[in-house]
Image (cartoon, rainbow, N blue to C red; front, side):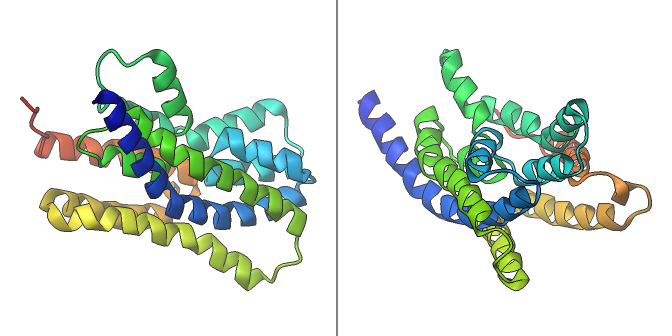
Length: 236
């Protein structure tokens, strides 16, 4: 029975990962063009995306490489921009059953991205096999997008590159909006997040912070306020 549930979750993960993977391919394709400008080869771009799995993080990484900064600066920049995934991993760890082996937790933590986290944490009954199915589709497509983006270089028109970059945001809205419509608290949190994010992008000094740092501040603040004001009841 347990194996049947694991198999079912794995298949559901693959299905959920298809639209995410397609969106990833489009966005990482444009990242590949940035990688090309940083003089990375297609193979180097592929493995960078495979091990990083972060659009903002990779953009910052490629820009840093292009600027010929030190290894230490590259490490710090990448850590700051991607630090929000630490919070997502902590949140997702609360969904994992007790006694789950460490290597499952390790692999899940490696594959946490905004979209893959969203589809995993929204499940009422979460198992690692669901994420494995999603990873199987999303991670290769993300890596291949960068690979082919490097090959394409700067030959694509700027309008097409811009359009490809917007695709992922539309997909993320498709993940967030359905549960938001069913839950008033979540609706308020999402609206507050949008408003706060806009405010942080225009307020003096704060707007100079990296997008990753702003995301961390907003995530901690909004989630803390929501947890205090409307805590989720423990399941019996």
